[in-house]
Image 1 (tube, rainbow, N blue to C red):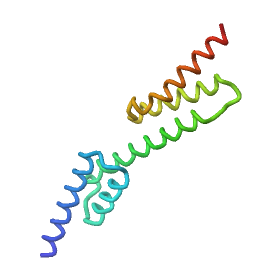
Image 2 (cartoon, one colour):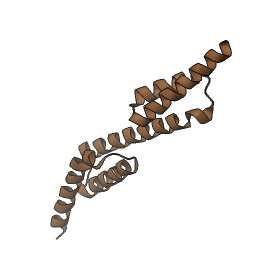
Image 3 (cartoon, rainbow, N blue to C red):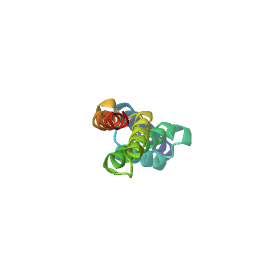
Length: 121
């Protein structure tokens, strides 16, 4: 009977993980399903997907912070600011941040690049 209950908890935990991954659940829900999966006794290979999703979410979060910091940061030269914002946007794209979310900082980068080019001319 206990074995059956353990088995049912594992099935429920796997289903919760699959659902969370399918719907693109937020990090808090992913963390909760990971915790539930561990408590249910799931093996490491059952938890790979949710762990990868949490890491991807963390990468996106870090990239968003870097973009925000690059937008707000005033460096000693506009060229340094352009380099930092360009690198932050590349990191954001690599992390899978949607282009719509990157539109405003990308427009700022383009504006800064135009101003720098005009000054250099």
